Amino acid sequence: MKLVWDGCLNGRDVGGLPSADGRRIRFGALFRSDSHDRLTNDGIAAVRGAGIGRILDLRWARETVSGPSPFAGDPVYRNTPLIAELAEQGTTMPDAYRTMLDENRRRITGVFVQLGDAPPGPLAVHCGAGRDRTGVLVALALSVADVPPASIAEDYARTDGCSGDTILRTLAHLNDRHGGVHAYLLKGGATHAQLAQVRNRLLSS
Image (cartoon, rainbow, N blue to C red; front, side, top):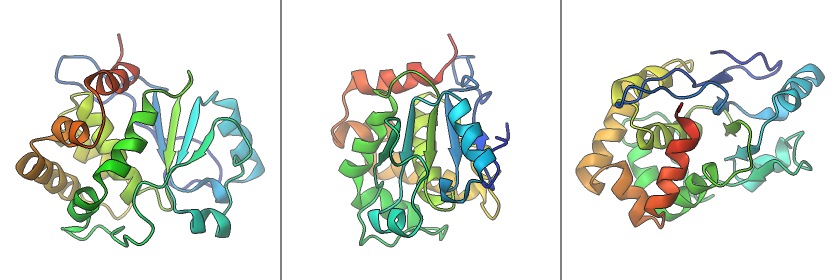
């Protein structure tokens, strides 16, 4: 469902996606978008009116300097770069996401667990374009909630310029090299309880 946040180009609620156990991702559980620094006053008001529990800004520190978030002073906001600042892998080239995951596992896992321990309310995740870093983190979260790869790819492809094949290749790489998403995150430092916390937060009861 598209989010009406004036100034965001591809904000959406990922609610409604199916889980393997017959449940669905709750509407109002996880929002994804491009950077908030372009939000208009109406867009800022809409975000604040959504009752968001945590905003995770996945951009590098230097990006937040050139495009400050309007929520940087709010308690709900955290700047948590998903990948190391020198890792310039943020493209949709076939191998880019695989390299991103291989070289930043502990950092990515550290951001992932913040989805579960955030205060009540919707989770809002964004990077610069809302495509690469956001796409990878959302794909991990949806995988932990047992959303099928085809549905994750379908959601990813709703972002302009993105192909679902990119995420399908990424998930296949996680299976082939790391033993799957759960194993990847557990080796990155997450616990089974933290994975369950994210899963339960996203899924309808």
